[in-house]
Amino acid sequence: MLFKVFPKEELSRLYTLLAPDRIIGPLTKGRDQHGHPLYDFAVSRNFAELRLDYGQTLHSLKNFFLPYREDLCSFSFPKDGSGNWHKEVDYGAFVPLVFFGLHPCDINALNKLDKVLLEGRYPNPFYGAKRAKAFIIGHSCTPQPFCFCRSMGTDTVLRGFDLFLTPLDEVYFAEIASSRAFHLLEQLSCREPNDHEHRRYRQQITTRESLFEAQVETSDLTKILDLEFQAPVWQEWGRKCLSCGTCAQVCPTCYCYGVEEKVDMDFTRAHKEKMLYSCNLLDFASVSGGHNFRPQSHTRLKYRYYHKHRGFVEAFEESLCVGCGRCGQSCLAQITVPEVIASVRASGGNE
Ligand code: SF4
Ligand code: SF4
Image 1 (cartoon, rainbow, N blue to C red):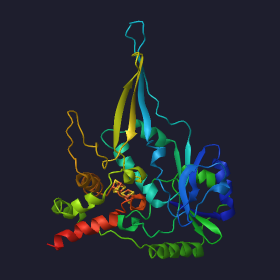
Image 2: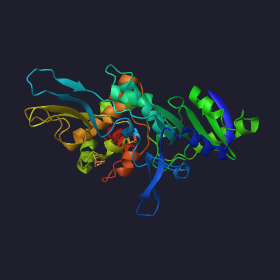
Image 3: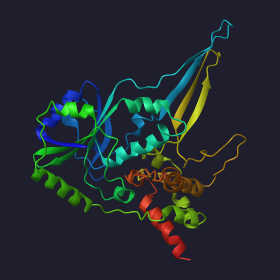
Image 4: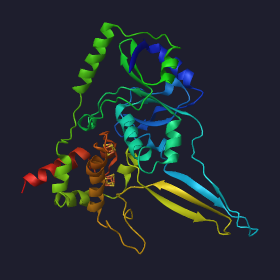
């Protein structure tokens, strides 16, 4: 990793250098009931509208890589009876995307998705095509009261970005992880950090670590989940859950999907569409013949927790949760990961 510093006012120049590509960044998207600003990732048209001091965005950025709906392929069948049907596949990676100002949790979330969708047994070329066109600029964050990324080991990030910026007094402290980022910074008034800036950077890390409030105790969690598979506490959470699927939609690492095939009435065209889905939805585990493997809400909610905190850990030796807290923030039933995990951990001890 290379470290450089450049004056803060040069950041807008970096934005301009990248502007020929499509820039996605944190923008203000209205206000909540208390008048606090709400943020979301969206296409940015000018540097001034970027809100790099944002706390957390409502949605993750996964939908730029995994759209809610995506055509997998379409087929055309000529009416001449020749049987020369034609198949079209479009990966939907139109222009290079620059992600400007991602927090460590969201970069770590992409790294986790990569494990399944790029490095897994069945790589997803739709995801891979979009990922290959992405340039990622990370930005340090201020921990929010609901973030528990520190518990999940995702409060810092070592890879998965081109450039990572930490504001320090008058300069940005830049971690450079790609040759494109290096050559871009060569066009700014960039220099080596001095001893004082090194110290300030280390101090800033220590100060930030002290600001985390929410926590999840993860030691032996997979074992505890195995032991508490039948714990009554799952039914209590199931009674609260509305099975709305919002948690999966906002989650940066939920990637489950369904596939629909549609055929035109005149049988000349057909297409196959993939849509993101949620394991909390009633019909997620329904199969042909009408059988539903998880008809009760608590079994579906439990499945989501076991995939994130047990199954994925067994497969990849890390959790599929980055502790961003979005699911808890958006859940109408106020179900949060720290509370669910704490209640499951406590359930054995209460007997
Ligand atoms: S946990 Fe909350 S957000 Fe998720 S499905 Fe249940 S009610 Fe909806
Ligand atoms: S499960 Fe919740 S806290 Fe964990 S990554 Fe998904 S949205 Fe964030």
